[in-house]
Image 1 (cartoon, rainbow, N blue to C red):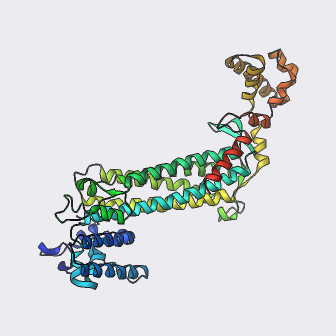
Image 2: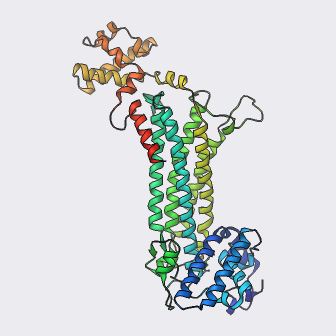
Length: 461
Ligand code: ARG
């Protein structure tokens, strides 16, 4: 590439050193922005034409030229040149090559600084929309399975110790709630992102009579950004997006961790089919939950992307600095990782089989209905909860010493601890009675869970 071909080469006598070019070049990754770049240029050219800054003939030539370049890229005929640095200069150079003089007028009243800020916002906006659709798919899959398992009893844990019986549907709907908030975070981020930097030019605005509201509207933005320095120099929209993805990834990772625990032979609550497991090269009996493990692991990349971009941005003085070119790869990588994790999680949720017997059996272990016993003492004997808790503790100790369930303790032995306990106590000690009694709003009672699952399924259609 001769120096004269570089758009900024006018005052340069020599070309860049190979190392200079190597550190400067971004076409290898920012070519992903080609569609956004063409759309931005189209909108800019239309505005320049409308405002009489370029002639209608030039505008028409630019529009046709961009159309042709779009075709070239779509059909794989476009040559992306490293010597032309980035996607913006690659497309502009090709435009000039194709249409000559008119192409040299496109860059009037704009700069690569507002151009890249616009392209990247458009790209992140598309990514948000894609991610929102994928999250919705996963929520629907979870709500479907929750409806199916509204009455399937499993142990609920705190500290990963058996706590109280819950239903599997309730557990799955907990993730639907988390994902709904993830969607909300992305939607909030989209609202703040949706302002158009185009026309801020290099940093100070421009002396041409441009119409920024027009380009903003053409590109689907709510309004133009209000400060030219801010327009070209912040990447908080990308950071907010990465923060939302990092939280989403954390949620997916927690679910992945549960899948790994549930599918382990020592727990066995859930099985995954051949479609979502892999075998071992040496141990023929193995069925490994690799998709869950990789989903758990990809959280590292996504959180890493957030930290990387925060670190890039934190010391930059106003306005644009080339540091910001480093904004793209972390975002691209995080999008790929989050998108794949969402797809894999949705696949596993649809694929998994609940081993309801195993779950039911485990739900009764560990004196899981001890709280129900204490609640009975409060209700039937009007005891303060703290006293009921103490009496229940003594009964649990008795069961533990004998190696039996709470329900297997003879009434007389319970009465030796608290004489007013009646036979009706046994009605409270089954796991079925326990979950059925949790009817408070947001509780695990099967009717509640079925209603919540229905509510979500209606919302998600
Ligand atoms: N490739 C650059 C980036 O991604 C485009 C902006 C270049 N601007 C400049 N003044 N060198 O940030």
